[in-house]
Image (cartoon, rainbow, N blue to C red; front, side, top):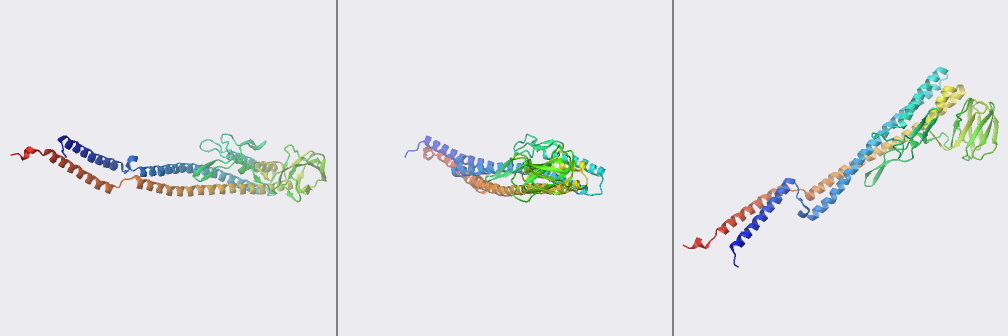
Length: 394
């Protein structure tokens, strides 16, 4: 085979470029700390590392969601703690009001205090989150959930929704509770119906919570006083005339249609008392009724109302503590997911590192080897190009 001078130079140039290219690649790897700088360096490792990194990025997004979930839950928890403290305080006031030694002025002072606590309770129910949304409005975070006051009564205008955040690929956690669940859906003492006095009543009588003593139909009833000492009972649902009549004695039981309750105090002619189906009452009605009793009732009527108020406040406190406990469980769940996520992130990082990171010890050895190869190629080129027939002609 004839080897021309041009072939020698072309081959030498190619060898220089290959060796220099190897060193340049090693330089890039060492400067970046990565073995796989481009997918072509190791297609299988690059593809696997990309998949793992995508999983790691999703995990990081869930970490952000978990942080937001913990923040939301802890804000709700703090507000419910305030509600619990208010209910406990109101219960203390109810117990205080049951002291027979208190006079009318003392009771009115308690009423003023309870009115202020009512407003504080309403403020907590309409609490905002840091973004300005209402905590207890369900999905309608831009709508004030509780409207009204102690005179007109409070109505819940939010919805029953509970906002949620996905904290992992398999778990969605509720981060709120509707105001209806917290403040309105409080189980009645009898679990079947609730009683109330008409707002137009002019007498000084109160009705207790009542109880189921037979086959209760679930209809709505109304007790109407035709005179201070007599009453008629109407089935509002069915309509028609009175289904029962009776003579009134303060504190005595009134029974009809499988239910029983008692009215205490002095009713006026035309006073009405409602019996509405449903096993729930609301906290605001409990407090406003208590204020009315403090301002207008005395003796047995007040004592009856005090006992009812304490019982209803106990139910309300149990309900709030139940919701608070569920929030605490969700916070624990988010924290547990955080721990799992942290472990997963470490594993993802280790896998990506194993697939793409550079082994510096091996790279240093390769640099020495490639440098030696380049130097050898250079020396060989110099010697080869320096050969000439004239060197041997003498």
